[in-house]
Image (cartoon, rainbow, N blue to C red; front, side, top):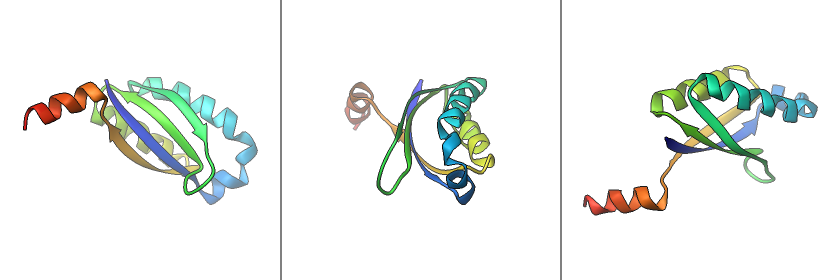
Length: 96
């Protein structure tokens, strides 16, 4: 499975309903499975982003569908980064 790091910021709607953020995170974790993804970790953060999540996805299409579904709820805007493990990076640079 491919690993992704999603950096999220609350929208105006999301911050107005911030007291529900833990419940929403639980619902998002459940929803991930419908898209062939697993949200293995979530952190609420201070700074430029309000949340950081680690997501495992079957492929790019699954990760994209999941991100779009979550974004369409209107509570967060995300920036998603494809992450590579040490072993994956070793294989990538080995092809150079």
